[in-house]
Amino acid sequence: YAAKAQTQTVVWYSDAQEASRLSHLSLLSDLRSAVQNSELQMWLQPKVKLADMQTYGFEALVRWQHPQRGFISPAEFVPFAERTGYISTVTMWMIERALQSLQLWQAQGLNLSIAVNVSTNDLRDESFPDRVRALMQRYDVSPANLRLELTESGIMEDPSSAIPLLQKLRELGIGLSIDDFGTGHSSLAYLQKLPVTELKIDRSFVINIDQLPSTQRLVKTIVEMGHGLQLSVIAEGIETAAERDTLRELGCDSMQGYFASKPLHGESLQKWLDQILLNARQT
Ligand code: C2E
Ligand code: MG
Ligand code: MG
Ligand code: MG
Image 1: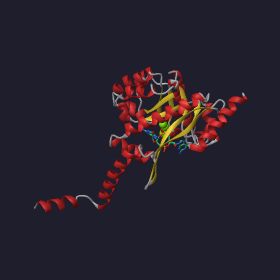
Image 2 (image 1 turned 135 degrees about the horizontal axis):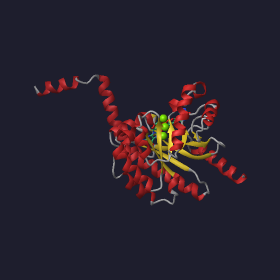
Image 3 (image 1 turned 90 degrees about the horizontal axis):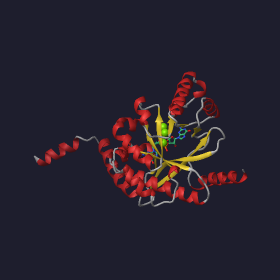
Image 4 (image 1 turned 90 degrees about the vertical axis):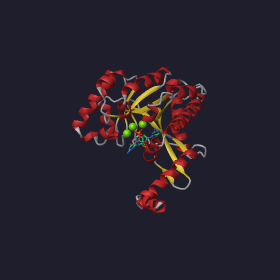
């Protein structure tokens, strides 16, 4: 009977379900060793001032180069890492990589920021601010050059526990940005209480904005509200000059997107940094 019960249990899974379950199990053990095996990479996408198109910082985006499966996109493995509780290791690894780069740049006379994406799971972990502080103590970096991006939906899931945590991070001097703004049902009452420094307008409002007067009116309202709360306002995912021009007219402070640059790494990043140093020497 036991044997029969076992076979019956097995047929509960379809072949496809079983395959996907197994591949997720092996993906988890792979993710555990990814950091040690240097399979994770930090790519940096420039954040650019709309007034003069100068780079003032970067957003850090994680990349996983898996030895067998090849490139695995963060859209695929970040939600998986969140479900399996491994995301905090990824977050801390990214923060440390950011601090290493910032320390190096500071020594070269480059005053730029790096913003690391933080998961909703990190926001629920009370030890997160202390772990960030401990890491920062090991690097000689101006705290304001480290930024964290937190999604609006992540904050609004449980604002009363997220707010004190954000407060502790702000006390470390770190900049805080609300990511994917406009998609997360913010309560205006909470928005006023959030100790953040930047508001990042989601890409869904940016696509074809030059042709969409009603979206322009909405974004103008968001920009004015952000400025009213003394936040700087950035738009993400700008791909065309027309989108860029429209956002500039609407009063947006800065931009990020393929129009300025795709995320950079290695040689392409070095070229971008060299150009910044060159511009700085010429002026
Ligand atoms: P996000 O934080 O909103 O990041 C912006 C995403 O849009 C990035 O995708 C970026 O490469 C992409 N992007 C930038 N400019 C453009 C553009 O002009 N057009 C288009 N179509 N896309 C653009 P990516 O790197 O695949 O990351 C996707 C999401 O994965 C991120 O969204 C973020 O939520 C998450 N993510 C990435 N890295 C990390 C990380 O280190 N930790 C955590 N927790 N999440 C991360
Ligand atoms: Mg982000
Ligand atoms: Mg975003
Ligand atoms: Mg987005």
